[in-house]
Image 1 (cartoon, rainbow, N blue to C red):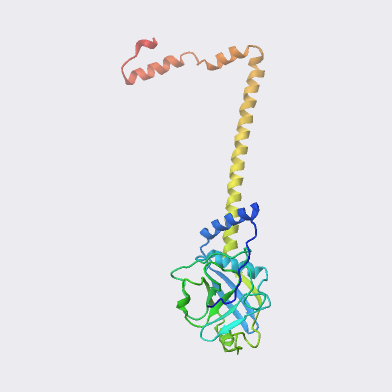
Image 2: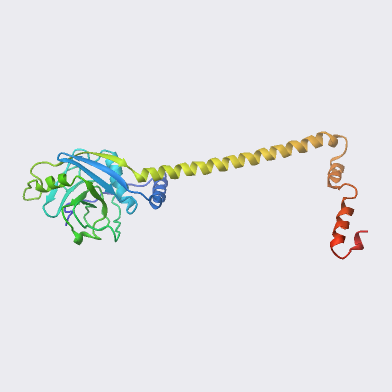
Length: 275
C-alpha cells in the first residue's frame, strides 16, 4: 500500500463562520473550470505541476492551501520505490504524520478519466478510503492497480529529469532515500480556485449593490410622492376639508365620461343607460 503508516486526525468542531466558508467553497468547486499550476522546488531541481482543479477541486484546494501556508517547505520525500513511486508531504518525515488544510481527513474523489497512467502522475496517499490529509506521491510508471483507491489530482508537466534523479537516489531497507530529497518550497503560478472564488464574491457584491440602489430609488420615489401630497394639502387643502379634497380629486373633468361613452358607441351597439 502506497500510504503505509499514515494516521488520521480528529476533526475540530466547526464554527458558524467556518460552515459559511465551507458553503462558499462548495459553490466555488462547482464553478471552477480551469487548471491550476504549481512549482515544487526540490533539492534536485524543480517539478512543475498541473493540478486538475476543474475535475477534483477539493483535493486540489487542499494541496494549494498547504503550499500557500508553507506547510511543505523543507520537508523530505520519505519514501521512494523504483519503478513505482516517490512519496512526500509529511512534515514529520516519518510517513505517519500530516494534516489536511481543512483540519480533518476528507473524501476521495475519483474520475474515470483521471488514472494512474504514465510517469509523473500526482496522487493522494492515504491509509484507506476517504482518509486524505497532506501526503501525496508521484508515479515512476503506470500504476493502474491504484485507480479508485487513491485520488489523482495532477500531473508533472516539467521536470521529468528531476523525477529521474529522485528515482535514481539510493534507499535503505525501509525505502527511505539515504540522501534527503528535500521539498524546499512551493510556488503557486495559477490558482483557479481563488480566481473563481474572487469572481463569485465580486458578482455577489454587484448584485447587492444593484439591490441597494433599487431600494434607494424606491425610497426616493416614496419621498417625492409624499412631498407632492403634502404640497396639495398645504395649498388647496388648507382652505377646504380633507374629505372634500379627496372627493374633488376623484372627479373627472366635465365631459370626460360622456366622451368615453361616445367613443365606445361608434365601434359597437349603443348602451343608452349612461344617457
